[in-house]
Length: 190
Length: 190
Image (cartoon, rainbow over all chains, first blue to last red; front, top):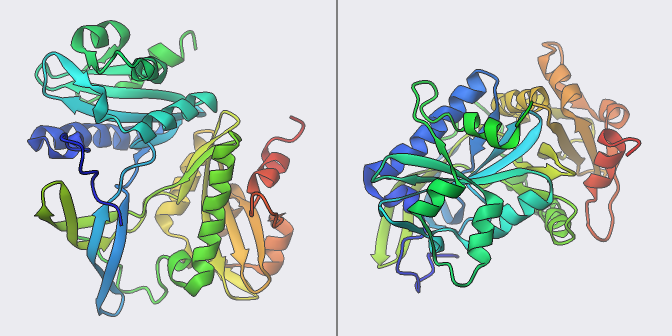
């Protein structure tokens, strides 16, 4: 059974627990993915939260109730799928700070996963939202990994993200048209 | 909150509940995937089981215990990832019958998902094991969908699977070298 690591002072899943704003970023991405699926533009899903199930009761036939379970540390990113025949894989994070995003919010496993995505020819990136500005940026996995591998770098500054990343503009349908940015970054000239 | 549909008489996740054999097929696939990852051959993961969390207790700081949750019907297949730069997506099923695999064991959502995988240019298939023979077959998604769409067809017969599918030979490392078959079927002449 796996609980949250106790030595961390930050919560390991900032997307879920930073109040309503956290849910709404995730909801925006999920809504956009539903839009992409409905319009046959892409096939991208959020992976279910990994959970270690310890005990299940069966209060009635055909009904299973989980009564003891624990969150597990994800071994991959949260989102993946297919866009224009290519594998696409990304993690979404948000931060309330106006200054920087601490890299410790990304699990080591997830960074390793993004490294493998690039190695196997997939498109990999991080969607990072600064909630204070209501701004969302796509940052290529290669750039995030480079920062992560640099022992001197503990966080991605807002200034750096603005320069290295690509802003995802808010829209109406879909709310967060991140594939528009994916087109510009990964499908130039197509 | 979502429980199992009550009108079904079959269990909706045969992989998990048909005794040890169910686990071992899943374990074999997971072990093979770990082998592929370790040897940088492919990046394929099983998706976590989708669960609807209703109640979480916090018996101590930094520790979350889920005390009420329910299984949800999966909206996608169980496995996906990247192989040789291409998206790969499949469902794994096993059956004890010596005669046929009932198509009702595959969720409608999963068939729709496989349809979309093909539409978006991914490689999609079903890994089907007949436990009575200890034989595993890769069946291309297109063939499974064709049978699923035929109102007269309620199941995939063993005879048909042997003809339409491609047998995955048991091996030592990895135990279930299904990418060997993927090479033959989807990467001919490469």
